[in-house]
Image (tube, rainbow, N blue to C red; front, top):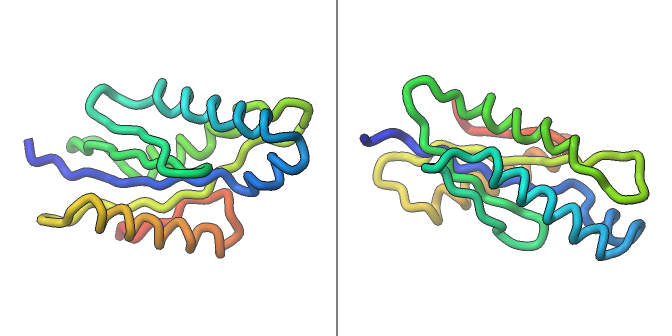
Length: 133
């Protein structure tokens, strides 16, 4: 249907601290919970995958009513529900969001989303940064 695709990279903020403070088993639990949550919230035509370490890539097929910034923000905020065993703090995510351009390949879109992710980290974390106007 030639609908645009949004590409979102999500990264768990201070994941190393979770591993170092609570153990790698707790870190693994956080990764598993986040992966399960992301898979459970995606639609049949969206794609979620673990990208590496504590990063996940989400490809969202946009129809006319979809608002990618709101969808990305909803995912980020809902991650606060993930439990860190033995802690009162919650999981926080930073993200980079882009819309694939016409004739752009997925690698290029992921690279642009990664640039936005780094801007989110530099801007204080626990936020989504985008180049969408």
